[in-house]
Image (cartoon, rainbow over the protein chains, first blue to last red):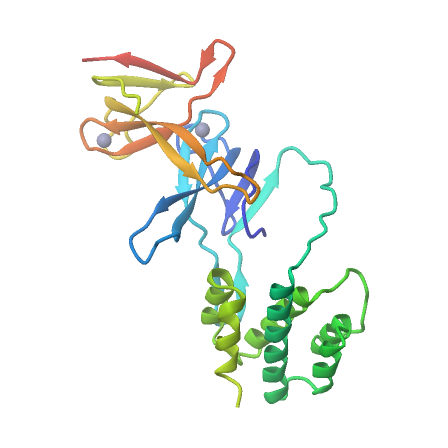
Length: 199
Length: 81
Ligand SMILES: [Zn+2]
Ligand SMILES: [Zn+2]
């Protein structure tokens, strides 16, 4: 499953059903992320959808991302799957530089999220000091009761993502609300959201 | 906005276009432009140019992108009035 469709010749499924051209019944498309302006409070807020063009006849299908949170099973269901027709050469590694302000915001949110898990007795309080010392791999190992395997470098952001996931899995916070904040507001929004749960 | 005046029968990759709603075969034409969400590093706003066909009888809209291979094009227009 993929989060976003990449703008390349591909076969696409939406919630496991293949996308088929209504006119010529071929199944290869180039999906573009397109948008329409929406009403207030939509200043700079766009209604994003996909406009997929059939590579055979040019036929157009428009759709939005129907991914959803399954409350019963407590998982987020990604709707799209995409098979690229042309394999790409591997992309050069991108070194992501996080600016200081963002990094501090990530650490602050991480601290709050971990305090919530400790408060709800989902994890021992040593995670707090491990996070302070930036031992993120160990933090995640504790949370997921696994051993620390260094397959990739774990930064504050990845650690935060994993901790927020735990908060949702243990139903400590409102998942729908948290997801919408993560998608729409990011760090400035996550902080007050978490704070309201701290006793 | 490019517009062909009048009404048309349309053939796309050799097949007659019909309306999925009412089976009509006569359409009016408009060229439409759709904004593409820019990539982070893109300065210039991109647009997708589509040919939009409105069923003369029921108003249903179908859209196609014009594809050209050498001298050939996927969309062929035949004016009917
Ligand atoms: Zn097609
Ligand atoms: Zn019609």
